[in-house]
Image (tube, rainbow, N blue to C red):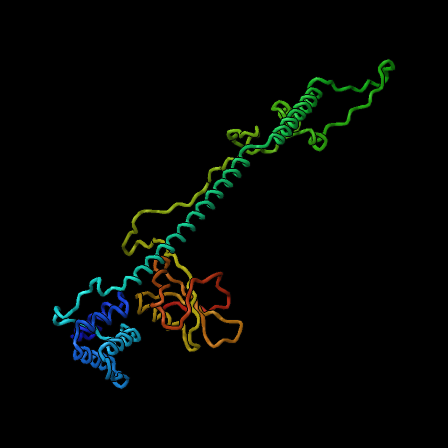
Length: 367
């Protein structure tokens, strides 16, 4: 609704300039440019426009400046939306604002305050920059410490690899070069009796297998064990630690779902068509007299669709009913809008499975 426009030059000047001028300067300008009659008329008009004529104080001595002060006070105490909009009919009556009417002291105070505020902001900005620089330096140090290994760790790693190579070569030479002793035949006194060696089992040979051993030793150990469907692996580029990372190769899917793209044939003899995907919608806080048919009629009125509605039986005594509606998935956003359902009805997507004690109601087809 548009505000009421009231023509008065004094009130129009004060209404526009009070936000940018101090009261002393405004009183001085109005007292030197408007007559006492204009000031008195403007005061009566303002109090009458705000229905506060009974609160107006009459000034007898030095009424000019005090009346202007009363006008300014009433403007500041009144909400701008409640006051009418004052306009100037004679623009030449509006006084100019010059340096003679400006309080330089207040301007200087504002400038000093702005300088102090700017200096404070600068100090905070410098402190923030220093903090950010320190944090960046710490992050760089942490990165360098994580990427570059220490000398002690490097020495320990080298010593472990050397001992591992020695143990692997000794076991390999023992397996490849040492012949197995044979048991002497019965009835030969000249041949000494030699105890048969204990057969090698996977459990006894497992401690000899190391991750970092040589390739030929790993082949020898693998040849002594029965293989059981080894998984295919692919080697990745070795890292700086001389370890080889292996990954299991993902097998391609044998059967994969596909979706048809042919248009649906029309006609009495063509009944093949895809099912419409549906999503369960939960409705609650419905009146205890509400039936499934009422919800079906409401949805039909809104979307011209007849959907299936199921009544949820509560385990506890409640003063309301709850239902589950199977809505088309492509229209789910329409059913999840607040303006679709009556006021007070709670709705959301249904979570879980429908219990067995639900009473389902299907829409009746018209003949």
